[in-house]
Amino acid sequence: MPTPTDPPAIKVVTVEDDDQYRAFLDALMGGAPGFLCAGSHRTAETALAGLSRERPDVLLVDLELPGASGLDLIARVSGLLPRLPIVVLTIHDDTERIYRALENGAIGYLIKPMSPARLLEGLAEAHAGGSPMSSMIARLVIRRFREQGRARRQLEALTPREAEVLDGLARGLQNKEIGAALGISDRTVATHARHVYEKLHVHNRSAAVARALLRPS
Image 1: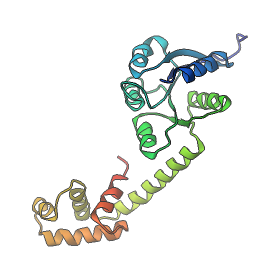
Image 2 (image 1 turned 180 degrees about the vertical axis):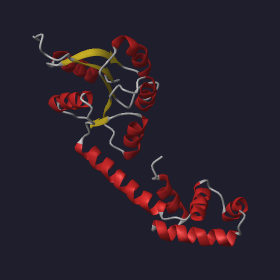
Image 3 (image 1 turned 45 degrees about the vertical axis):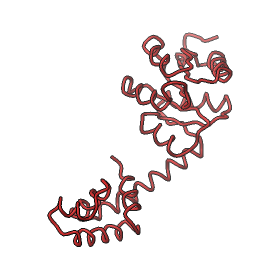
Image 4 (image 1 turned 120 degrees about the vertical axis):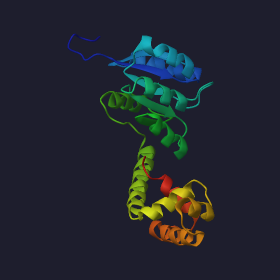
């Protein structure tokens, strides 16, 4: 039983479409010392409708939901409540979903199956301002930052004209169209493009565009 000196329980709202697993999460939050199940939802729509009433400290979200996806929910909640920590709990470990979830506003990404103790630890970490992540997810994020760092340094080595040519390539323009927009010949565009490829250490247009897209916004 809590005492007057205990810190307030961490109020968690879960969004999970698997009824059995959601019941497990509800029981875990309701029975673990220092935690409280403030709400439980099967869909993103009902979760959004309940946020103002439930006022969670942490939102725990699955990605595969009926109706609006967990990714959509994360983006919506981040816009409405930017200070609310959102933690993903999912079976999906593909890089596309991971990066989209983090870009949309999630601060943690955990992979099922997750031990109850580790899940509670991750929720407490998120509430304290941390970013709980499964070890494999953390490695992917670190690798992404390293790629961004290399790409940024390589992109900074481009001249202003080379950067303009790369921008045209990224927009899908042909050399003649880029040349017309910049007031130079398509042969000059090709020369600049070759220099871009050399500086980015790539061999073609597609690879150069992919490298440019790694640049942080």
